Length: 335
Image (tube, rainbow, N blue to C red; front, side, top):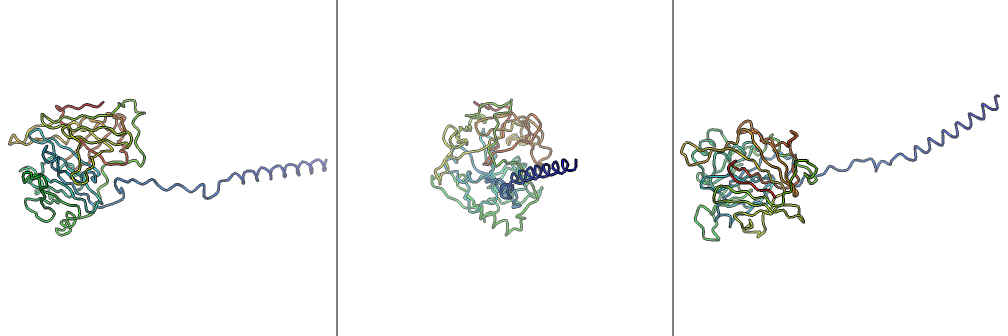
């Protein structure tokens, strides 16, 4: 009996050791379990605390011919303004020596979005309402009607003087330093970015978005045409490719946010009163697809929230974004 037990013990030990050896051999090496380096967001340094600049850019039919610097902006807002026209506000962060133009006057509604980015506000001229807000709200700003430092004029196409003002991100930074503006901020990045392309195709509410036509009143239109090879949208203004005057390259967008808003008129019955505080409908468009979204903004300075129909905050593909604020009465076509 003792011999049988001894034989069984020896067999168990040998078999167990074999299993242990097999387990040890299957343990991955240290190299294989080291996590991959975190994907980097290229459009913006999400960890940077540098304050952005919000620059008002002329978008009239004439001035579009000499636009420059928009491709370097990480976000561009397009606003309807009086006369059936639109105007842009471009955001720049950590971008040295970018020439931007042409610079035009501010409207008070633009300030609402500069505030949510905690941006230094840059324009050449202002409506009476924008001027009052900039001063009463204590906003850091540079304006060409009172400040000469960061602005100059160029007129390659012999345009009227209101279409000839330019600025530069280095000059804005120097102006901000000389005037004691804070150059850093605790404000979070307004949008959430994915290092990988956002795929909207699995969303049950998606629709194909190869062409986006936006009509602002009777005189202005913006179109985005999807370039599947480069996975971005080529920008077209009033039927013509929107070309940077100096680089000769067409402006493109990676993401497009449509924000439908109500509006009225200011007390002088001339300037628009865009209802940017409140909530409404819109679309997120990227990589050839669009999905419906909901937007909300609690105060003029608070971050605008953009949610999908499940109530989740949207993610943007790594790339530049155009936010198109459209009156509910204006026409939007996605096809």
